[in-house]
Amino acid sequence: MERTRPLSRRSVLLAAAAPAAVTALAACIAPGGSGATTGPSSAPFTLSYLYFFGPDDPQTISLPFVIEQFQKKYPKAAFEQSSTNGTTSNVMEKYVSMISAGTAPDVAAVNPQFIEPLRAKGALADLTPYVKRDSKSFQPEDFNEPTLVRAIRNGKWTALPLQMGLWFLFYNTTALSQAGLGKPDATWTWDKLMEAARTVRQRDGNSLGMTMPPYELPVRDNGGDILSPDEKKCILDQPPALEAIQWMGDLRQRQRVVPDPSETGGQAVRALFDSGRYAFHIGDPGFLSGTLRAKLAFSWDIAIVPKGKVAHVDTVKGPSLVMSADGKQKDASWAWLSHYDGAEMQRYVATNGKIVSARKSALKAFVELPEGYTKQTIQEAANIAKPMPYVARYDEMDKEISAGLNTVYDGKRTAKEATADIVQKVSALLTG
Figure: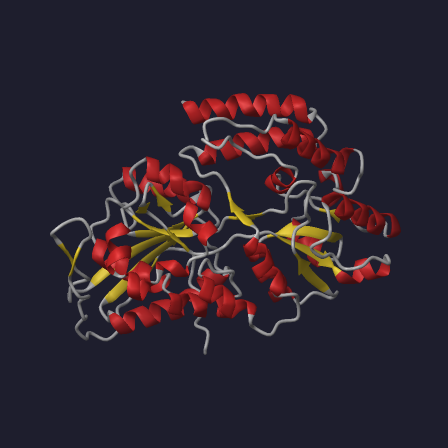
């Protein structure tokens, strides 16, 4: 299938295709009510679509084909697209500012940490009647279950999962082989990863070892967690979490297997991994797509993330699609959302863009592609994935946790000192 040209990240109006009449979706009684929910009218319509993907993102690259197929169904459909990529605003800030200006986007792709905050602000439309009405064609059962935590609250759909933002252990096969190390597998623990990174770094003075892992992985693998089960209290100061956080701080300060910022020369992880300086990096599907496109000079592969003393957990994140509560074209918006995030288009996006889709069928199609790396790792990661705690002030909570943990990584405070501050601030957010 021929790939269409990438879209600009700037707002662009895609002109409508042939002026054929649009076939209306069949009317249907909405669940729990007597009113009919219909599809787009035969009149021309333009949908505004806000997202955060950059011009080289696989979602952006795949979008022209998805739009082309949509316009075969609705020839008078057009799109106004805008991306926050390259701007100073994240997608939630832009979304809120558009709502305040009375120009809320019809549909948007948002990061997982912003869904619950937007939902709490009443910014997201209830998609439940549409999902139930079109359940046969839309196949909501095809989504991987961990992705639905961010999509459904109190029995209502207010988001559609687009991707599974899993973590994988990327490793430089050439560097490991030269250091006499075997390939990582499901038996590797966090301590074994640390020892392997030390071995590579001691052998090669140019090696930086490994990157700092996402904090929730060692914490959960050690038996800890971020919030209490009722999501009303931060528990990062509890012994299992405390031990894991101090272990991460020691990776840089004592073990010297994670570089100090002064050692990286201001270069991004992407550039340092591609140049062979990192032996290990825990990255997401976006990093995988970039690695596949990079055509590296050395051999590399991915493995499932290490396990801890208590558990073996991955994290599922990834963007989702939403419809604005203030949108004036809800039927047209749903037609687009159900098309874009439908099983057929997601199989295309997953296989064409090398994307880890939230849909089981699309993920299966991607995993079955013949590639030169261990593809089954993706399914293994999905099998142990656990969602993050999505709360109304997630974005603020995430900033407080990151800021506090950085003081541990930089050796400015112990894990006990930092987490005491984090817990106080985050718990206040949760109850405020």
